[in-house]
Structures are given as C-alpha cells and as structure tokens.
Image (cartoon, rainbow, N blue to C red; front, side):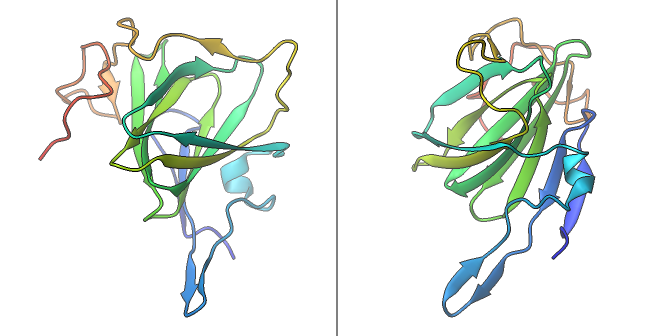
Amino acid sequence: MPLRGIRELSLPGVKLAELERFVDERGLFHELLRSDWQELLEGDAIVQANLSVTYPGVVRAWHRHLRGQVDYFFVVGGSAKVCAFDEASRHLVEVVLSWERPQILRVPGVYWHGFKALGNEPAYIVYFVNKLYDYRTPDEERRPWNDPAVIPEVINGRRDDPRCGKPWDWFYPPHR
C-alpha cells in the first residue's frame, strides 16, 4: 500500500509521511517503513531499528550525525515533540508525533535534533537509521538540551512565531 501523503517540511530533507492504518474487530495494522517508499527514503537503506522509551516531560536533545546518518521516527505509544535545527540558517522544524495519528518523520542527521515526551505517559519511539551504530567511534555530536545558543530565527517556515529570536524553550506553553 502506498503512503497516504508525504510532504517536505521547511528544512531540506525533513519529511513527514502519513501512514495508512487498517482497523477491524481484531485490532489494527499498519506498515512502518518499506524499501519501496523511495519518495520518503531518498535512496536510504535502513540497517538498524531502535526503541526509545522516554518518561513524561523528559527532553532528549540535542545531537546530530555528521557522517550521513538519517533517522526515521515513529511513535508507537504516547506523544512526542520532535525538533530539527539547522545551525547555519537558524531554521527549526517542530513536529508533534502521536500514537493517535500514524506518521513517520525523516530527519537528516546533519541537523541538530531531539525530542520531548508530551502528556502524562511515556513516549515510545521506534526509530530506524540508515547507518549502523559504531560503538568505537559513534557518529554523534552532542550539546545540552537547554543550550542557549540554539536560537531559531525561523520556526516551521515562519519568522513571526513568538519563539523566534530567543533561546529554544522545550517547555514553552502551547498556544491556545
């Protein structure tokens, strides 16, 4: 079954795909990732799958991969705010992924990225990568989750977001 919808977000290579969910009296089923979804994969071959369980309110950020790793995030339980930040352009993409709406998010590792577990339950995130983790020389660069140098000038393609021009605040209250 093809993807229901795929769109490139405001950073090149960051894509969000809607997944088809099939529900009947037995439960539900959906595909998470297929090698023939080349519009999403852009030639990547998935070589490893990981599970992250993050407690409510915890932030896991920031890190990036400079040797070509691409991450594909899918929430299997709970909800998470996932962000990718391009240091050169000062552009940030913010996406909320939830078990309620099956989506897979593609994030090229060159962008600083991370996530925060939302709500009152843990966020269960399965993520796929196109490079094996190298235990001896990991392709991972880190900075603190609350690094004051992460100052987006553009958020999701907008310069008028009230959070622009300020250090990124993972705990900024949602708009009502």
